[in-house]
Amino acid sequence: MTDNKPVAASSPPDFWRPLYFFNLYRLTLGSFLVFLAGAFGPSLPLGERSWKLFLAASLVYTALVAFSFIPFKLRRPRFTVQLALQVGVDIVGLSVISYSSGGIRSSIGLLLLVSLAAAGMVSRGRITLFFAAMGSIAALLEHSFAVLYANAEVALYVQVGLLCMSYFAVAWMAHTLARYAMDSQRLAQRRGHDLVSLSEANSLVMRDMQDGVLVVDEQGQITQMNPAAERLLHKVTGPGDALSEVFPILFGQYAMWKRTGEASRDTLRLDAGVRARLRFVSIERDAAHGAVIFMEDMQRVQAEAQQIKLAALGRLTANIAHEVRNPLSAISYATELLHEEPGDARQQRLLQIVLDNTQRINQIVQDVMQLNRRDRAQPEAFDLAAMLRTFVEEFDLAERIEPGVLVLTRVQEAKVGFDRGHLRQVLWNLCRNALRYGSKSPASITLRVGTADGRAILEVQDDGPGIAAEHLGKLFEPFFTTAADGTGLGLYIAKELCEANGARLEYHGGGRRKGARFRITFGEKPGNGGEHEHGG
Image 1 (cartoon, rainbow, N blue to C red):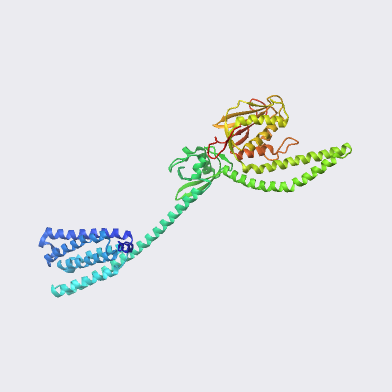
Image 2 (image 1 turned 120 degrees about the vertical axis):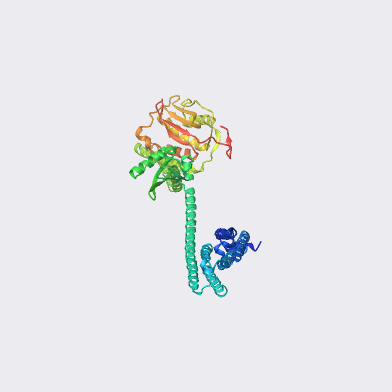
């Protein structure tokens, strides 16, 4: 077993296959010579000098070629030894057959040209000239023997010399072609390895890219699609699928880009409801023009921007806590002391203005610091209706309003996953806004629990004037307010806390009733995996 390792490693596997076909040719040649000898007998011109020697040499040559298949199957001895032995058998066998058939006049020696050429190609140029030298020596010895013992013409040495030159010419040509073939093979293998590496790198890049990538050909058929694109478009396609049939909206943008050369710079809502920004890159292969479509997930971009914003807010709130609240407390305390001392009405009014504004600034600081709680959400599963009943009672007491101003209507039992403290803060902000702008009459503020698209929803509605159309675009922006004493952070904080808990806060207008209506759409129904279930 240990002897096989160096033998197998001595020659590449692709050396043995050509040797097999070379042996088939030799076996066919030997069988044909035996057939001619048996079919035509002594009348055959090829055996004119000695028909018996021709027949015996043909039989022995064919038997040796057939026997050579055994070591070929065993791959022992090594490749170069087997090739040398087979070419040696050809040189000796064809020289004897040539002598028995009349020497150089029979042209049997030309058959050795085929063997030398084949040996040169099979061995990839190895020891080809050595084989040519051995064949030339055998041709000269054969003719010299014929001159000495068979009265051959001495003048035929010229033809023998020309034949020997042919041996070397064919051997050199085979050697050159073999070297060229080997160089071409090495280059092809190198290019193949490069292509494999590029293909693997391309697959890794496409697989790990966070942006969706679609590759389409000149007919608009999808040739490649990375996992990010499958996730964004919520669909898996195969090579050859038409972009126009699978993703019509995306195809419309692709057709516009091909027509105008420009892609829309706006954020688009694609077929699966995905918000993405598209970029097209042309691919030119020969006369064909395909394209690579990059889809930038704007939700991911917004999430990354949100993380950067949260980090900045964390640093901001830390600075506010240290740099603003301490001097603000000192100002407020000094103002209260001055306010207690006797003074004229004008002085008391000015002190009251200072005190009111310090309280307002303190409220802004508290609101800003609450933003730092966004990334510390601890969702828990609880019954929403039960929690709202408790909240209504607490809100009535805290805001000192008559029972019945804030009411629950059409309440469905629903379990949600949300940070309980965050939800109370969101509801407090929404209900305070509703109380500020509502009529404070019975049922002027209503809470409704329902479902939409399989998710729980909570709506807060008032009977106030509603939100003006020109303010809708800035409704959830920080520090935007229409109230003189407002901080402009209530709705912004409420939206941030909802997003931190996987929910969505939106303004839906008053509906049939006048006023403002805000809707909280909760995330998917919470499971039991690691969540704690609490009662109301």
